[in-house]
Length: 278
Image (cartoon, rainbow, N blue to C red; front, side, top):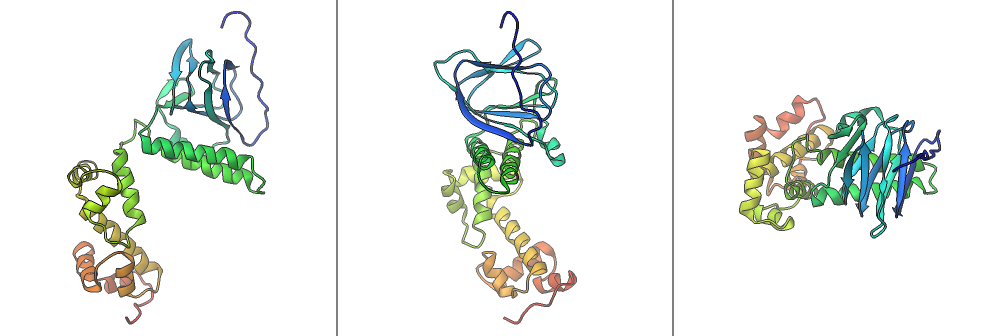
């Protein structure tokens, strides 16, 4: 790091620039940063970020973002294990900025450390998809790539230590429930899908969501039923089946207990078309 430092070039004017590569001994130094933010996600290997002469190590799963204009000073000095990264110089959409309020390493430089395994896999997959899409042949190449980047940023936001953190297995259980609302969903079946004991799953739901898993499933089913009642002409019996209730009678009973009115009254009150005859 001694002597005259040579500034790393940057192709200005690019709407989106991405890459996926393995770097041996390599260093990037842009004292004036770049015109749009830079994101780097470490897939494997090790590197260092320098901010105000302080070095911060980067390891597998770490993701760093530099704001536009923030000095970029990073790289790897050892070639024993290449530094595998996915990177993107990207134009942030206005609603992304709230998702990018990560823990800071210094002015304009922020990092999300290695998240829980489930989130890590989703972030990694979304960023790989971003890079593949950015170099595709579709006339919507940039849009597909930015869509994948947006998905990655949402998962990174979920991994932000400043946000309320859900247990990785609980997050997977919630996704499993959402994908299988039309099927029988016992606590044991949900627990088995995410490799937990029923008692541990119940504890996580009560501790982090505030209600037991059975009540959570019922709430999700009622919410979906409400949406179908106001947006479709499906019969109440069909909605009961679609949302996983064992019978129309049981659906109507639980709907009334939660919503304080019958499904038919809910549909009429919202001004949508009347229920079809079963």
